[in-house]
Length: 240
Image (tube, rainbow, N blue to C red):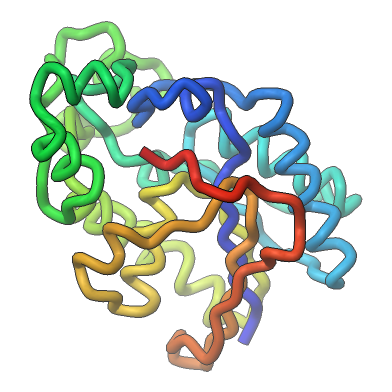
């Protein structure tokens, strides 16, 4: 089978500020740009080539994918961008710092929202200008299926549709695929690939722009998973 590589986007400005980002369209920092370029150089050096690149609808994954492909001299690679690969929607927490939310709700509750599998944060109001129902980029998506706040479990279920309808069929054709992901859409993919227990996947963590490489059999069962940790990366992830 082909290779599947999942790379979390480079550091964003709100990663740096420890803010709940979710579906907010926050761009990369200068450090995040260099992280994505390092990932591209590492993949090129290792001899990877891809038939398809997939991103979310948010610029931090799109720009990271461009930078990776640029370093691989492969910007001709077809790219699909889809909202089902967006970060987990943090609802009313969006834009607030972790410290602010701990002060308001308590550390135990914030920990459950950050690292629980089925804990859903307070929802964002649909009339909020930041709600996906108000954004032009999602105008073709039925309003009722766009989230206003999600648990990791919710994120897994929406990513599952993208996996079943788009990603798995391409892999079954023996094609190589790279996905530029977010921390929680990456966790969702890992859950679908490995059937990882709920509590374990909620704590599964790969730092920004460290490629996660999967070897799969013809039934898309995992034969091998490895992280390309021999490239420069932060010692701790900025995933909230």
